[in-house]
Image 1 (cartoon, rainbow, N blue to C red):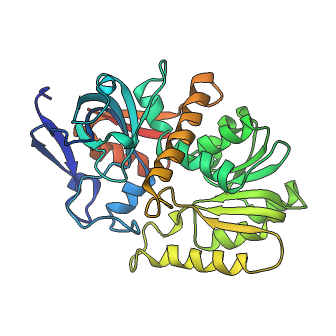
Image 2 (cartoon, rainbow, N blue to C red):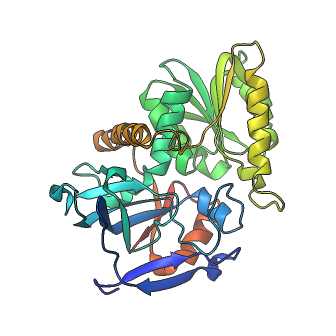
Image 3 (tube, rainbow, N blue to C red):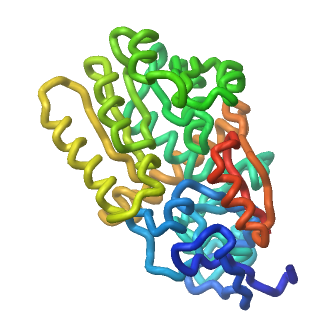
Length: 343
């Protein structure tokens, strides 16, 4: 890749991973208030797995450049931007556009990456870290001594949920396939095999009084099971519908069904709470407040990485040109942590 060339990955429509296209062009020039970032690491998240199937509930029309988040170095800054930002390593949540060698963003949307935290390591903690932090501390408000259930405890968000919860003194039960159980036990997690065990029965056996919080990205029937496993005063945080990834039909319907259940459950007078978590919630009502909260929470996650309370789980690093391999690997369900793309 020449230094003076932009390379980006384009999702042209509902395609298999091999259908992704590479597009070449000129490096963008920052407008007033913008920076151009030379990408060092961007991630393959569950959102892109849904987007390539046309199943992500608010994805843009095809064709577009995917990429939910990125880490890189500020290359150039537009008018009105603090010139000291140039040369600094930063992270950003983008939703789309991150799978590119160079990305222009509003300077207000970037968050400094602390010294000593590598680009790939930081990348594992951007969307996944903010999601895990906000669900644990802003929604479930977990406290030391509580017990939680984390579905997909070996996944991108799951690995961070587990580690942040353990560092807060919380007992964790985590679902994963058997190959991941030893790694979970080493982190102090009680593993449950979602393939061979009856999850609700096993969790009730472990915690007869119910758990204080459940974090559920599975959707479908799992959400109802999760709600029933809550102790009095417990919190369910639903944050996806992985079970419907390969379904056809409306991409909004699985989320609308969860939202309907959440509304219904919250109307019941039993002291339990349910949330459907969306990391972008609130942006429409106040961009400045959204940015301040994102910066505060991501800074906390990076500090936990820096202190070693959280270990970055980089499943694999592949160049942008091998994006099809990266997507296949992420979709295989065989890896722990995050598949990272580099320029």
